[in-house]
Amino acid sequence: MFLTRSEYDRGVNTFSPEGRLFQVEYAIEAIKLGSTAIGIQTSEGVCLAVEKRITSPLMEPNSIEKIVEIDSHIGCAMSGLIADAKTLIDKARVETQNHWFTYNETMTVESVTQAVSNLALQFGEEDADPGAMSRPFGVALLFGGVDEKGPQLYHMDPSGTFVQCDARAIGSASEGAQSSLQEVYHKVITAMIPYTVLLCFLHTPMSCWNTACFSGQIEST
Picture: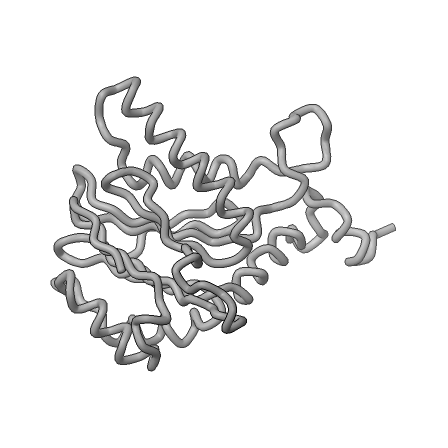
């Protein structure tokens, strides 16, 4: 006797007969409700931008921070549940510092993303692992920076899957933004062009966005 879909929904680590994890799918859908975030890899570095959502005139715009520094050469943009993002960001920062103290070298962007993705997979209903989360993280992350391989940009979703990208958009307007990125992106794009690109296809002033460029030295507005 097969369980109904609602019964499969109750277990975060229970596959449906179609091979689906509904709770993970719901977490991915939650990203579509978050602020739009964009990452663009250039020939000189990586530029990140996240939409500022000002829901009240009483909110202080400068308090909305959705781009954070992981290490001196790596930054991260987020979309989704910010509280979930903070847990993953803390994990990334601890990993980079441990790597530095152990090996006296900076961690690559790929290695940081992989370490965070391992935490994203640690969820379930068992009490054996006190560190396991009760549900998937409802946030997607864009890791960007410059390491020994040059400029690097990675996208990670709530399933723990991460991929390297030349340009990527996540969040509520990700579909339209991704289509626009595919039209304008080219491999030799320079560090300053992404800001012009954002102004052109997002039709919003840059004051409505958190932006940062990681090219060895961090410049942010």
